[in-house]
Image (cartoon, rainbow, N blue to C red):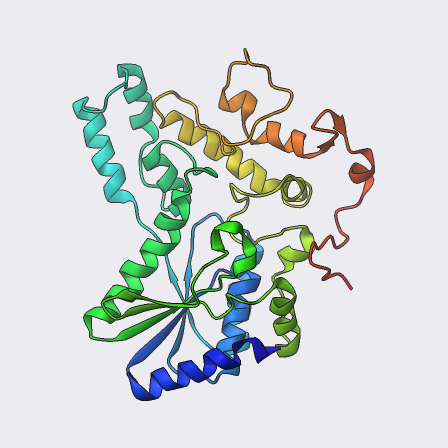
Length: 332
């Protein structure tokens, strides 16, 4: 299973022995299959100075939070939790609104936004309140602000300021997407920070083989029809995933529906839907778009259909929600 990394392991040892012994190995943990396989690989390589960090977006399923605790107990390693804070950005926006310095805002829109434009303590919701919109497939500012930046600011920079060399271990595979097709296994960022992607050449079968080899249970969400683990739901979730979420986790849909209401009030046009990048095949060109009519509930109804969204999938609707529906063949 680990033969794919043998060549890089040689390079790893040469680097450690011949260049620098003052390395902190930081593994970003999401609760997903790839970051878990990265932890497994680090243990197989007997890597020292391993530190695990989880960036809590505030938009995760409870099963993922439970799984993070499970991983900490299984590997007997503490997992540091970091969270983004947008209270300063929200306060700056409030001041600009009060001063009338933001173009296109009417007095009524400013008054409406100021009622809800306050930090909630939930990173994902606060980010959307600050931006006045949800992330989308074309504007994925969520990863940067909720995961990358908090880890850099709260974990990497303090270590680098102490003169440490930091290896950022990332569970990224080239076959995940076209955008990652040529991702580098190892690269220098600068200032003592390096990106290390030991799974770059792996495929998904190897990832779950590593789980089985080490006796690590995969995140249970993979048996509930989820292709990915992270935000619940993710703005990039598939039609099938959205249907599974609605059937198995209706409370997640209800939460997003409430967020659509709050974020819409904080937006200039009083319009912000979670799946703004998705088009409803039944919507007409003259439809009035509003979060109450074109929000997540409408997309959930679309997710239950087949034939281009024009007919309900009666066979799927008849299925129970307790059975395993893994896209990766994890069902026993």
